[in-house]
Length: 363
Ligand SMILES: Cc1ncc(COP(=O)(O)O)c(C=O)c1O
Image (tube, rainbow, N blue to C red):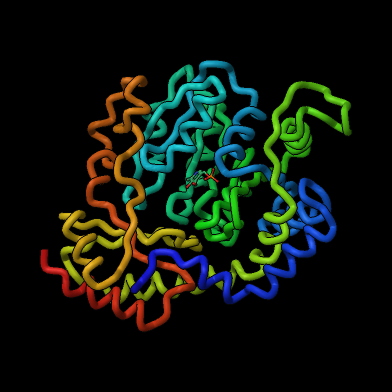
């Protein structure tokens, strides 16, 4: 059996540390806020080389909070790539803003040409998603943002530790968001997220907002909301952060093997830009007949995933926008996408099984 993701295996490898960390939080009753959250926020900010990291309840809240903090004109349009998880777009609508979809490029990242084509007088911001762990073209995106006076948020939910020219993603834009959903490259044992920024003012504003608009207990400057990282998750993340670079190296090693050893014209491998460090959250290939492919892999006990079965503009949830995206590459190729296992849970035997199976594919 080759699992797509094996969180149990990872837990067993670091069980002693994890159990101790959880027990310590309970012993100290530091359940919400407190030293473990503070410690993680500092460690994560240092890891990224960014000034502020603010823990929140999950990656979706992180996006919502980041958009709120930018104070964009109500009803203005925020540019979102057509291929991403729905949370990226949901956060826009939930802030009273309008989603404007743009296409993706051959690296599955937001297409900068398409961004420019969709900018008009109502556009206020761009959300750049580093999809699958591959960085979006931040240099170009920031140039466009400057030209049209737009704000930029990086959605780094799938890209902890990814880099462009040795600079970590999450440090390029006004604000960046992370998810620590258990299956992410840096995952908690429940929900978790963070907003990061180099901007002191935005950081202070967000810290108050996520904690009922308060600067101190019962002194509420404005109505905020409650979305906080809890102590147990922070302690777990603190510990797992120490392993992240090692796990990313393993992901890169596996990806290199796949890219070098899968030689089958029936399979379209992912392309990678030069000068980047890929977080390889997902290894996404394209096959002609996805359903048959999934079954073919299952027959050898290999699990697969789909990210995502339908591009966002094709979902019922976005019919109301009436944005015709039928000519988008992202909307045409979604039916071919399939993710194969990648992660530190795979040993050489399992990687060989996957490579062999893929090289034998004949349809
Ligand atoms: C690209 C992207 N953005 C946002 C999110 C939302 O994160 P969460 O599930 O922690 O709310 C996810 C993950 O699920 C994601 O993959």
